[in-house]
Amino acid sequence: MSIPPLAISLSDFNKLRNMQGYEQINLANYEYTTQWDGNTEDSEIDRYISQNKFLNVNGSDMQSSKDGYYKETLGEGIYNYPAKNIIILPDEICKGLVVAGVDLFITTNNEMKYEDALEFEYEYIPTWFENNNKELMKKYDLSYQFIHGRIKSAETSEILNASLGMRILGLYLGTVLLMISLTVLALQQLTDSLEHKQRFNVLRKIGIEEDEINKIVLKQIGMYFTIPVTIGVIGFVVFIYNYYQIFETQMSSYVGDKMFILNMIIGIVLMLMIYVSYFLGTYYTFKRNIRN
Image (cartoon, rainbow, N blue to C red; front, top):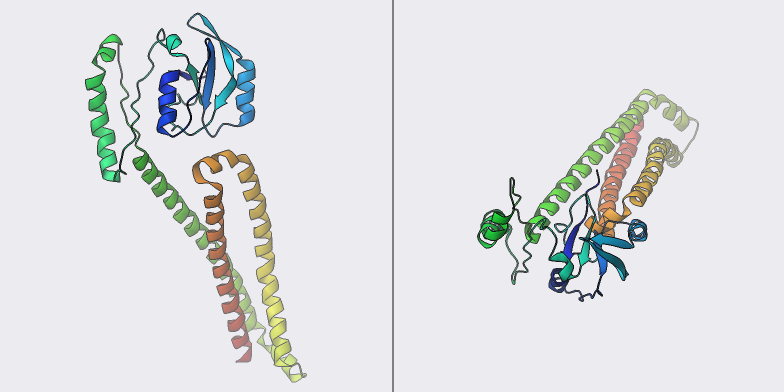
C-alpha cells in the first residue's frame, strides 16, 4: 500500500520558504504545486506530474500549476515518508481538510549547543505542543501521539558522529586487510631470499655487478607487489564508479561531491603510504638477506 503525500497551505509553505531565505510562490485559484525531497530524480517527478495533472481535493478539481514542483531544501520532517513530496494548496482549500499533523518550525538567533538542542527537542517541544494545541487534541481521538522535535544542530551532530564512525571503521578495516595481504607478500619474498640466496651468490661469482643484482631483486619484488595491487585498483575503480552512478543523488544530498572525493583521497593516500612502506621494507630486507 502506497503512502499518500501530505498537503500544506500556501501561506504556511511560504513561511517555510521565507525562513530559509527563498522567494515566495503564488498559486492561482484551483491550482496546486508540489515540494519534493532533494533525493528524488527529476524523471520521477516529471512522471508523477504527468500522471497527476488534475487532482480532486475535497470535491474541488485542482490543476497542476505551470511551476509544477520545487526542490529547495526545507528539511525532511515535512514529508510523510516513504512519500517523497508534499502538495501545496490554496489556503481556502486546506480549511476543509482533516488535520494530519502540526509542526513547529523555529529559526534561532544563535547556534545551539548539542546538549541544549537535545533538551529542547525532548522536553520543551512535547510540552509546547500539548499546551498550545488543546483544542486539536480534544477534537481528534489521539489513540497514539507522536510529538517529537528535530533540531538542526542535534541532527547535524548525530550525522557527523555517525559518518565519522563509519569513516574510521572503513579505514580501519581497509588498512587491516591491506596489511594482512602485504604481510603475506612480504613474508613470501623474504622466505624466497633466504631459501635461494645461493642463486645470487652464483651471479656474483660469474661477474654480475651488484647494481644489476639489485635491479633483478627490484623487478622480482615489483612484479609480486604490482600484479595484486593492479587487479585491486581495477576492481576498486569499477566498484566506485557503479556505486556513485547508483547513489549519485544521495551522495550529493547527504555527503556532497567534495566530501566524497576528499574521503576517497584520504583513503587512497593512506593505502599508498602503507604500500610504499611494505614495498621498501621488503626490498631492503631482501637485499640484506642475499648479502649475508
